[in-house]
Image 1 (tube, one colour):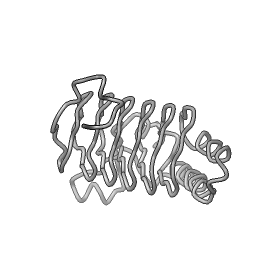
Image 2 (image 1 turned 120 degrees about the horizontal axis):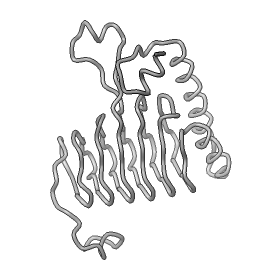
Image 3 (image 1 turned 90 degrees about the horizontal axis):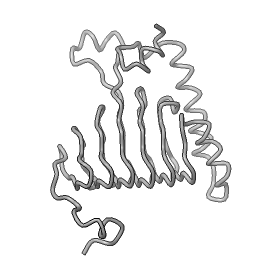
Length: 194
């Protein structure tokens, strides 16, 4: 297997592989092009995102700057919104559903490095997919760690560090993020908090 194939299979791979470095350079060029666009260029922004991402639904909107490693491992649904200065490290797939909101300075990490310092020196890493359901709201300054799944309609409070799966309809907060309540009345999901 090539290092890219190992990466895509969520196996240990060499991060400094020449093919992967070229992929990163291409993604950073596209991200730089996106980050240089203005508010008056919505069609150009969508064009760039559709080239950068592995899959991109209708009406994506990201406030620059945006950063990622490869881009091709990112899949976003319809009406995706990410606020200023988000970073997605997509060694493994990052899959985000429809109608999701992501606050500023949020990081989604789909990559792990070895705990053993001697192994870290070799430059190996291993991806773990992140899945975010439909109609999820992630507040500002959040960190989503590798391998996490966030269920539909969940809310991640600002500043949270999500280290494990979040059930559908849950509101989580803290470091590490814990369930603080559930959205139980479906009629309130789209309405303001009382």
